[in-house]
Length: 596
Image (cartoon, rainbow, N blue to C red; front, side):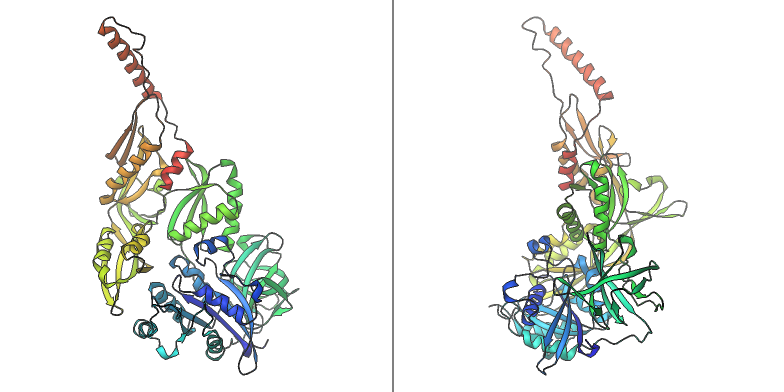
């Protein structure tokens, strides 16, 4: 189709504002999906996405729409995730579009992620069409949503289209607005093919399937193309689009999105954001999206050590589908061979682990999540530490800097006190507050990343009864009094449980871990000491009492000194056993503690 009749757009919104329902309705209205094939969350192909009601992967789909002016248009939609941990997916999708539908829930108004995604789209200079969804709800407040669009995002409220994706109200107006307002794609003016690879997945039969947006020239089967990042020349075997299942086409022309397969077998050869060009007459590189750096690190180990190779190949396939995920091999005394993995956030980490379990049938265990610290040594050298095992000895450390994040928390007015208390409990400071409307405020604060890893988001939701929302972006590093907390069992350090924490929180964390370990370590013939230590200082201690054989059972009557003699003899034996005895901690105990 000629470029004047093509429109590329994506749908962006806060999590749970109805993006996926709206994309379902657009697919149905344009006849891409027959009524008998319709089902809820059609583009969410993973079981995990359906179960949790969240979008994890961006999904491209091509629709044909006959506008009111009688002309036929090709609409290429990319449905995007809403959660903060998947902002990278969103930025990749936006780089392949000219416009975006910004969906706002009429009942909840503008939330933290709405603001973040709006700024992402503005940076790419996209045409933004505001859509107020869920107007059929009894507590919908359209006037307030329009007012927030103007005050928070500076978007003219008269441009907003009211709709209900569930009931199918206003869908035609949205399609007409896409045709009228989203600019058609323009060729870059280069002499040959230029296409942007924005996603990919691994197919057992076809190898690597790469999602592309063609900016210049055309892409067709049999063509020799060059991947500029790896410098590799490959022959295109098949090109096609999605509706939403893949179907083959003769060619992809300027402005169209789709996929291509070639003889690419390895995950490392295709880099996200890479430019695909003609092998004989290469064009310059397209501006791709920025490299993403993992924020949270955790060790992932196979429960059965024989599964190590299987886990390695599973991770390579998963990385192809999720380029924000990074991993490298590591070993642990307690857990054997495994991988140090980097994630964008805690939800991302949870999803990756769940996908490894389900899609690749892996039994895995993950260590406590940590972040990257910058350590300056006394000799002036700098070191990056993402694993407590590599933390240098305290005598060589000049200072430790921890990563900070700028967090935007939106909450109802009556919860400001609770939010400020939570932020200060997490060692954060509120920078300033903004009033969004009569009921809500936005707190901008600076927090250490490792404090918001575990339960920050959940605590916000519980304190505000579900009305609060948050978004964060990386800030700079800041010097902090961080210490390495070691767990010792019978004076032997257990590397799987060690972590880097702030000095003020070390004692509480050590006590919790020691109590948990006391529950799961099986009793021995001798007393087992469990200790939490910072360097040489013990901050928490628990004891697993010994099994005791009744050595005095054979004494019936007689002098008390005889009993005492037997007990003394037993005590000597226990002492000797303790000095040479090893405590074998079963795998289940590690799993229990790490789960907790």
